[in-house]
Length: 265
Image 1 (cartoon, rainbow, N blue to C red):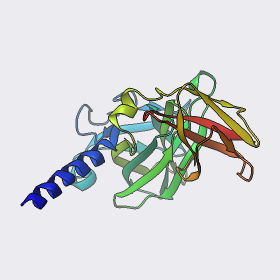
Image 2: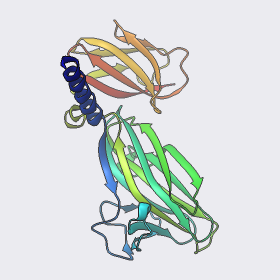
Image 3: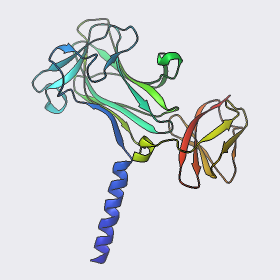
Image 4: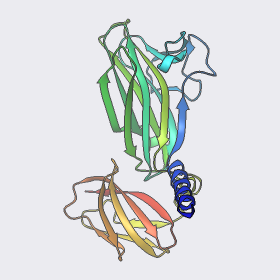
C-alpha cells in the first residue's frame, strides 16, 4: 500500500510538471464572438498582413467545421491572401503554431509561417520557419515549431495561394499557438538573470559576463537543436560552428535562466 501511495504521488508530480511545461498563447475555434459572413480581420486580434486585401470571412455552416463543429474561417478570392496573429514571445522558448485546414472548390495551397518582427517599427518581417503544402478536401493539421530568437512580437501567418481562380477557398479551424517549454516562472518573470555577450556578432571566442555565478551555458539553433554545452567557465569557442543565428541559454547557480541571441559570422 505504501508503494502505491508513493507511485500515485510521483505520478501527480509528473502530470503537474507536464502541464506547467506547456502554455497556450492563443487559440480560436471561431465558435463564439463572430458574425456569419462578416470580415474576420479586426476580430480577436486577426490582422491583414501589410497591404494585402485578404478577404476572410467567419462562417457558420452547420457541421462544416472541424470535427462537425459549425464555425470556421474561410480564406477567399484568387491570388495570395495573408492573415496573421501577432504575439509577444520569450527568447529561448519553443513555440508551436498549428491549425486544421481544408479546401473548397479549385486547387489551393496554404502556407503557415512564423516571422521575425524585430525590424524598424516592427513592420519589417523576416521568415523564421514556414510550411507549405496543398490543401485537401478533408481537414488536416498544419503545424510548425521553432525557438524564439528574441523577446518581443512575432507574426504567425496564414498565406493562401491558388491557381488564380475565385473558386479556390481554404477553410481553417482550431488555430493554436502554444509555448511547449514555458513554465509560469518563464512567462511571468523571464530573464531575471542579467548577462552580456562579447563580441556579438562573433567569429571564435565569446565571453559571457554576469554578476551571478554561472553554472553552465548552452548553445541552440533556432530550431531547438543543442549545439554545445559549456560548464565551469565563462566563454564559448565558436570555431567550427557554421555561420548563422543561435540562442545562448545561460544558467546561474541559483537556478535563474536567461537566453539571448548570438550571431556567428
